[in-house]
Amino acid sequence: NYCQTSANSAGPGALISWGGSTDVTDSNFDLFASGSVPNQFGLFFYGYAPGQAPVGNGFLCISGSFYRLSPVKADAFGTAAFSVDFSNLPNNGPLTNGTTAYFQWWNRDPGVGATYNFSDGIEITYQ
Image (cartoon, rainbow, N blue to C red; front, side):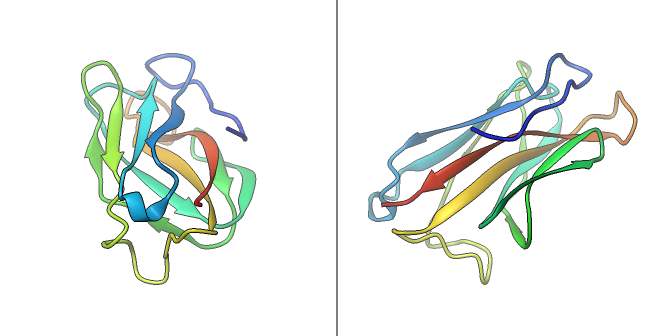
């Protein structure tokens, strides 16, 4: 993990993690966010360069172009999960073996300021 999270209305901030395999041919890669605002929508997104810039109530940890995955809703505990479908990614946003990508979680936070926040970032190199 890299970059930093920021406190949200539910606590010290959301953290991103992953599970499964970094071999794209296995089609078994999941993204998780914990510490998010419970019962709020958000989405995982990725790009090909790291960064750290203040945006909203947190930090955008990806620089340059980025690609959004489908929205998901955090559960009552503030946990969200998304299974990446490598055959159904955004146009011009391929994830292939040999690619390094940077992921982050964006989520609604109606309880404070800009009404949205981010997790920390995570760097993944697909093999």
